[in-house]
Amino acid sequence: MNTIKKELRKSDILSLMDTLSKKNYNPIYAENLEEAKEIILNLIPLHSSIALGGSVTINQLDIIDTFRGDEYHLFDRYNQPDWPSTLQCMREGLLADFFLTSTNAISKNGELIQTDSGGNRVASLLWGPKNVIVVCGINKLVDTWQEGMNRIKEFVGPLNSKRINHKTPCNISGVCEDCQTKQRICNFTSVIKSGKRVEKPITIIIINEEVGY
Image (tube, rainbow, N blue to C red; front, side, top):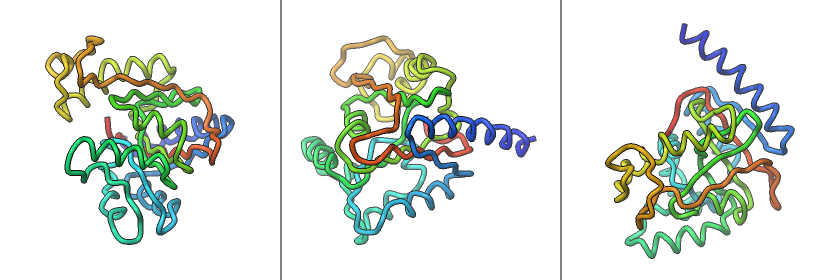
């Protein structure tokens, strides 16, 4: 039954990939996390500079330690001594050769929907890094961008707030309360309707597994 279900999901992914291609994205299918990791390493040449969006999906790829090696230059947001240094690292990452991240949702109409606390991911998706690679699990595919926004409010925002222990009402209640707290998790939102950028098109790797939040 799981094999049949996976084949049905693959059909949905391939249909979405056709839509994404028509909207100037560069979509790539991956059967699982391992395959997605291999695709990423083939896309990013050695000695490239790489910046990251905060992402459970990217952490699950088990690829960050590879980028910390001598063969790449990583703007390592996760390995800074304090918050000002982290902010500076993310600013410098806007000039990276590659930006690797995930998204909160992708609609059937080919829209990427994402919300940030600090705006690093939203900014880098739209402008800055020469190449953008978005990695997304099947669990993030939605029918409409409005459904994607609901997914963020009802699930992604509260869960991420709890994961990184932001001092927000949703960390306690599990429900978005449209708060105005200092550590609000959903300050900056973008809905990307086309993969076309000033530099190269956005590459989207869709994994036929539930990955990330």
